[in-house]
Image 1 (spheres, rainbow, N blue to C red):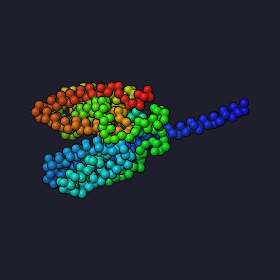
Image 2: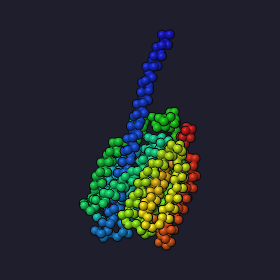
Image 3: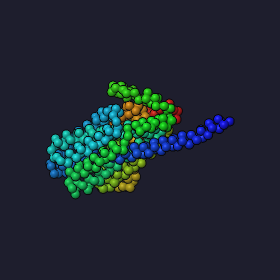
Length: 448
């Protein structure tokens, strides 16, 4: 009896310590998740501070140095090409690198190349330095795509991906506002130099804040922590290192990834088409002034931030990790929003603003989920490259939008341009519908 009582007392005494240890682990995990999330969000926003500077400096370079718009257009085209290739290549390199070092190095490189732009005026100097900027810029998002699935489970990945994605709008809005103040007051060079100095500090901030994996801190992997698998050995089997050819073979064989890539290409026809041509369309067809059209386009971006987070949350909580249904419903709603925007009579500026809000909300939701779906369909050793492939298709859609919409508007009017947008949105619906039941393999295995 005494021995039984002693054993019971030992169990009772040990129980609080076990509970406390689990509670401490949960608290520690939560602390690091929050730290990783805000570091990635503000860190990637800093990439935009040293990315779009050249676009805002173009008018001054034309007026002060006599460069033609065609010459400067070649520089921006080279940037796009290098960035597209770099995103694919750096996606693979990122998968095999320490994400903390890789992302920090990319931001430091972006800051230094942007800083150098403020100390030259030669055409070939601008071309070479800005091409290097494109390459180091492409080192920014692959580590984000790698770190989020390492720190957050598939059941919460959509929400945090949507939150992190607002970094695009935050960074873009800041540099746009800065350009309006810095160029008139301090000259075009200041738009390159001052943001670069801040980005250098942010590169150091990223290195101090980020950590590559939970295991590097003595924590369990997110899959073990959330109870999706029982032991780390199961995860190690899924994360075997593979050659570049094997990575390509796996990506090519993934039907769901192909559907997502094609859906993203058609989606970007609409997204970039609206961003590029909306100010011109609003002025020519709706009678809006430049200030009014600018505010309406800003409404598009603001609504997009909300739409991205909402889509991620819905895919996590309502559809249990399935991204296809949310993307499909958002794209169906986008078709109706485009028809509404198209048919608003001229002079109704408030209705145009409302239409832009709807279009922005519904176009950014699937754009966020494309990256999440790519992460779901890839292993942790191939996620960076998978997201890079979806980015390549996005740039194909952007190129198609820029070329085709302008040609249609010139030859057949804006009605033809909107028919093209609506057709692209419908094709995107079909592609996302093909992934209706697909979700991360680990969720299927865990039967969640």
